[in-house]
Amino acid sequence: MRLITAVIKPHRIDEVKAALQAFGVHGMTVTEASGYGRQRGHTEVYRGAEYTVDLVPKTRIEILVDDEDSEQLIDVVVKAARTGKIGDGKVWSVPVETAVRVRTGDRGPDAL
Amino acid sequence: MSAADIGFILICAAMVMLMTPGLALFYGGMIRVKSALNMLMMVFIAMGISSVLWVLYGFSIAFGDSFNGEGGGIIGNFDFLGFKDILGLEGSADILTFAVFQLMFAVLTPALIAGALAERVKFSAWAVFVTLWVTLVYFPVAHWVWGDGGWIANLELDGREVIDFAGGTAVHINAGIAALAVVLVIGKRVGFKKDSSMRPHNLPMVLLGASLLWFGWFGFNAGSEGAANGTAALMALNTMVATGTAVLGWLIYERIRYGAYTTLGAASGAIGGLVAITPSGANVNPMGAMAIGLAAGAVCAWAVGLKFKLGFDDSLDVVGVHLVGGIIGTLMVGFLAIDGAAGIAQFALQAGAAAAVLAYSFVVSLLLALLLKHTMGFRADEEAETGGLDQAYHAESGYDFSQAGGGAGHGAVTAPAAAPAPADDKKVDA
Image (tube, rainbow over all chains, first blue to last red; front, side):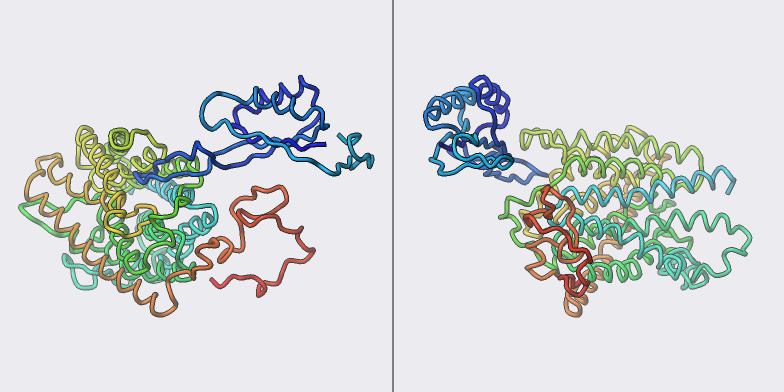
């Protein structure tokens, strides 16, 4: 099993969700995140004082998948999240040792 | 007073009362999350303090007959202490109506100062400051300007009198310069000019607060006529015209200077316009009100940048908006006044009244702030300031962002125990 994590632009979440559903993914975890990469932040003005906001809003998606689906699924996410402009985000995966479905106690790939 | 007048003024009083919670929201939205409640409370507490003092001695000092004779009055006498005997007097209805209306001014004026001191003073010290400040500064100055025997009210030059219809000097210049004096004593917030997190946390709340202020200000301004008549109507019209124009003035300045039309700028422009029309609105025509509003909006938009250049931390720009706006309105009416009053003589009177209030309020406020600093301590300790005054003094969080029940910025906490923690267990040293 692998854990795929994607940090993307918040307004791409619906496209990514639709693409993952079409691919056959049954579940995911989505959280609001903030951060920056090459895009850096932006500037805001309050009563003439300029504030540099380093951390911009991002959406973080986490999906557990079987090993064989991993690379293909990453491609699906990248394709759906891409706008071609700076700040589109990152996708990465890491190996996962154990997964348990809380309700049934199923372990391993059965828990996905 | 006729029944219509009494009815009108009582409604105006209730409208002015709403300005103080409006101010709390206006200020509170501009504060960081961790001290937002403290800001609301600093404003709100004035409702309690000034109401009590008003009955005990405030009304008497502000509007009793002058101690030192007609015409040169410094403070009122003590005939109205505790409102004794007023209920039995002939004409007590008029006195009570006037007293409740003016009480709202005594609540709002010290509360205005709170914005300059945001996020860094001890709540207990603030409460003591409000008590001393209204006693030694606001009540006397109100007597000077509006008392029958007050010395500013009786100034005369070339057949003209000082124009301060609803409080450009007594309220806004007074609070604005006091704010400057206090911030010079207490110093800057930790992170001033460096910390990019010092942004308003809730701009919709700021706009809501500004709108409540704007609404209540019709009562403040029109009600200052003390009667339901044409002057009150002119004042109400000019209040709207000047304020709307000031919103435009601020936004135009911002668009040229910073390339954006900000919500905070629109709300601030409204307050700047309201401040400037306060002394002047009953004595100018609507075109004059427009000129005052435009000047107030644009000049205040420029003035709020001064604190960064000069290095004083007037957190929410009480100086840049109330002091500067008050001066603009007080001086401009010298040249825009209707009925042939406009001119050098009127301007000189206006400048003189402004200078007197500036000097007195600055000196006494500075001394009060120094007194508090060297006795009970004015400034919150650094841990309370950086951790947030809401937790330190109020044992509360303004917002619960986390479904796990944690306070703002404090992460998840465990479920509350059956019995609340004893008070001495909490870090509340206010």
